[in-house]
Length: 174
Ligand code: FES
Image 1 (cartoon, rainbow, N blue to C red):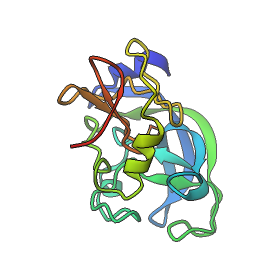
Image 2: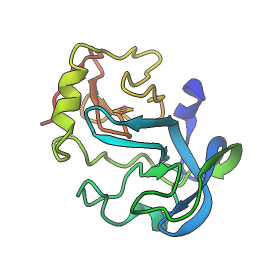
Image 3: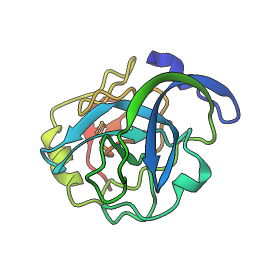
Image 4: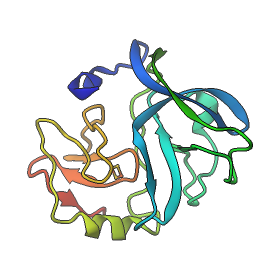
């Protein structure tokens, strides 16, 4: 996707990576952000999953309570197989790039300072910094060029690592 993803503008259409998956009991085609991965270490979430792209997610998918206890559903994990609380007997699969509408600006990530594992994640990456010309999150390699700068900071939409836009260094929340 590269830096072109910075051009994701609400109301316009883009070719974006998609998976066919079940989310909230609905089988559908969902736009994803970042690679398939697990978060066995630090976040202690061993299941392979993608994350739904919050700029492209349908409105009905953006409400509810995340399993972490955070009350906004955000960059929701889409599991690859069924042994989870959310997804029934359905195997998610990557289906390539499809044309989809960008529905909104990237919402504010609710995780920094709220999810219990976030401090540990921040400390683990404390010595890392972002290449500000081509911002890629050091945690799972997510392209951050579609993420707006807020308060001098870029916050990764997947797990909430925060980066100072002057120095590129990882920043503590708050
Ligand atoms: S991919 Fe996990 S914080 Fe960025």
